[in-house]
Length: 161
Image (cartoon, rainbow, N blue to C red; front, side, top):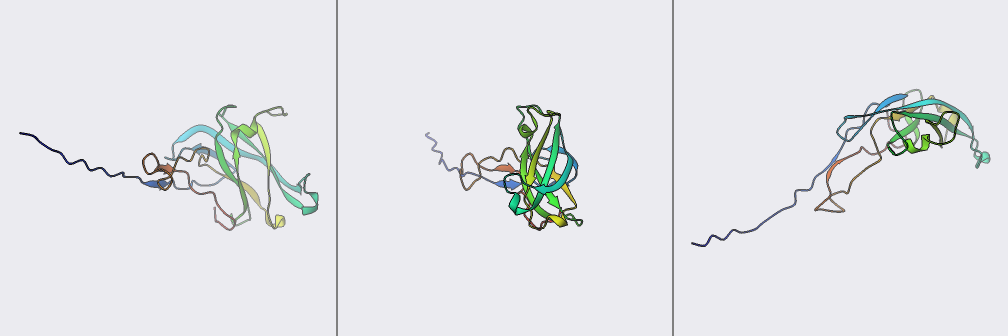
């Protein structure tokens, strides 16, 4: 007796977006499953001042940050956002732990800038704990090897944190 099996396969590709963690001045960096990675990211300080390369554009937000527990090869990333007093985002960007390494008074501290339309509304700078350093292929790009958990989308202007 010969048994013939009909081969039929279907790719079950699913993209899942992780839930955005609670923003704060000091956060535990988490992976896409929400597990802590053993690294703390913190805003050390911030101030309004003209960007040295674009002084004619007026004040922008200059902030300093730390990644405690990371090393020069970690390259973890979190979103940093300037917010108003209601925690509504005025401007965001992704910062990397590798930016915090190098010659400086404190080699674990880095600095960056946030461009905002109304700097007078800035009440603080918050970090979002979700690691943004790796976002694998999506199902739309690669039906066979794509899918899985992806970091949440970075916040846009006007998002509540």
